[in-house]
Image 1 (cartoon, rainbow, N blue to C red):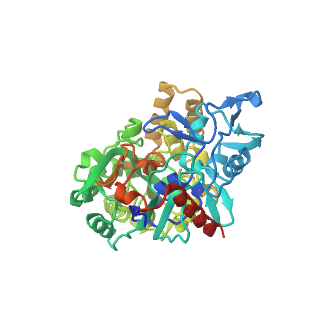
Image 2: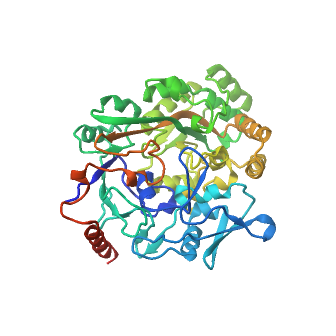
Image 3: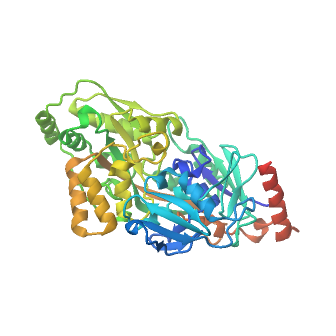
Length: 499
């Protein structure tokens, strides 16, 4: 019997279609089943071709807004279907994040992209995890990646097995994904206990302060790669005045918030929207209750009716304890005299609905960069087209401040076409002045991995990294079973899945 490589999670895998952009339970699962047409090299914007040739070819149509690329040979979905240009175009046309910026059609063995506006780095959009290519077969979503979902998956426990049609060598025969739910107080006690019992080979869902209690595991920490935010809903009357938004920001002590979640508060308290991994954009906002009260007086705002603070329903790297952080934020804002009610959606479906409707005065959430491009990060948070406007766009819309500013849109587009340091400073200055959201803390990427895992990569957050990991010989294959027999067994399993 093949021994599986065991991965531990705290969140259920709620959404099977990876194109929704809301599979918070694990981007790891998506990365091992599905592939984008391009992939970014770890820690850079260097493009690696996966399903399409690179570079894109500019077509002589409509003023440079049309590009195309040829499908690379050899890729097959996990049911054996050979990948075509039609598959790529059809999948992207059903992907909200892609449709906001472009359209895709098939032309022979080439995919033709028509951009809705100029984009000097359009290939970065095609490299994002939520723009992966999917083949729908009934209720199943098939991919071209190194693994396929084994039959009878459950939200709390499921397995990934080798895709028999994947062209490259895949070292781990099976990956078992198991959920260890949070305790009522939001702690990861079950996951931590499973790690220390030796039942988990890899997890990236422990909190920073829990690492000190991990035994006999390798520890990997990558600081400052995402940011938690307090979004002010600028469609609500109370937050339409930027002085009010600045007052609320000034009432919050970011170091005190970080100290609750991390031992070294200075290393995690945010100073600007960009996480350190992408650069620096200090907002220069200091904790000052006196100035905050003066700003409220000048704006003519008094704490009359209660405000609603919505909170992301599950832990994320930028918010290891969402509810606890929300309670601290409410306590700090009470010094301005405001009464704030915390509302935490039950699950991702309700969270999506709250975001779509803008049913909150403030939202406590955050953002993990899709690429190493600071413009991508900023555009996701403040561009007008990123405001969740309907049930489709809500799966991707991340401008939770619902802030629409023509000048910001124009500067972001200018930076997209022709990057310029002075224009970037103008973007940061406008964000500093308007304060549609307030950065709170930087989140680390944290992982622990068992010592029995061989060839574990340093860039453990990049692509299907577990496909390169090996277990000791005694664990890596079934005794007396050849590779061809193993593949045949997988095909039988796939036929069961299809039926």
